[in-house]
Amino acid sequence: AQTVTQSQPEMSVQEAETVTLSCTYDTSESDYYLFWYKQPPSRQMILVIRQEAYKQQNATENRFSVNFQKAAKSFSLKISDSQLGDAAMYFCACHAETYKYIFGTGTRLKVLA
Amino acid sequence: NAGVMQNPRHLVRRRGQEARLRCSPMKGHSHVYWYRQLPEEGLKFMVYLQKENIIDESGMPKERFSAEFPKEGPSILRIQQVVRGDSAAYFCASSGTSGRLSDTQYFGPGTRLTVL
Image 1 (cartoon, chains in turn yellow, red):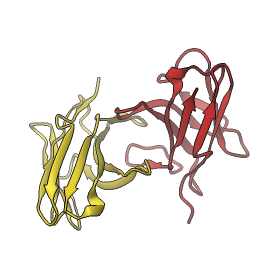
Image 2 (cartoon, helix red, strand yellow):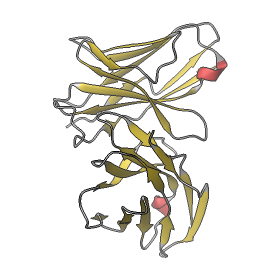
Image 3 (tube, each protein chain N blue to C red):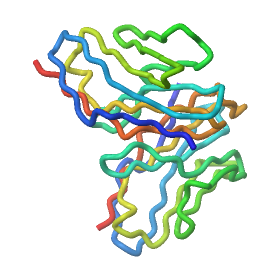
Image 4 (cartoon, chains in turn orange, green):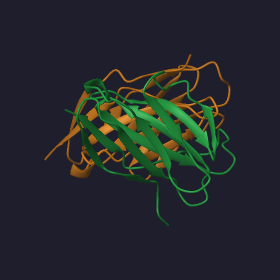
């Protein structure tokens, strides 16, 4: 069975600083994808970044980047130059079986002005 | 280029009533997935449908819940005789025609169901 674990229920960061959100996962599949989604108070699920397991290079999207450690099954999200609009719940997800996304329980990020 | 659309965004029902949640996938997408998010939890897979077919409903409660994706019109998630424990956000996602692992699922804005 696949699992996704986010061990940080809540994190805080000062505006303009950098924060890292942790995620570990477990799957027996050799081919899979990993995602970070942002869920603001509107509850819309917004795709932040996607990583393909067979790619060694860490994915980057503007101020968002990941540290993908395949052997350790770790997939952390780094947010640089944090902005007030980054405040939200962040969910890590694993897509290994053909159609099921497995989500973690989320990390609530607070951005302090 | 409309994304995944869900309606209603908010739905209030009394215990014992029926709830019908609608999902229109992105244009060109024929694969629909429903997920449920209980308070303070992540999303959990419920069911996967293609046009006129249920492919996997392993995440659906055995009773009171059903889903369909007709040839014409939106996908419907139906909850009969709702109970307070059904209060949650229900998300629909869609993906492209192949349903492959590489197809990203795009999520709608969700329907928040409140059962009084």
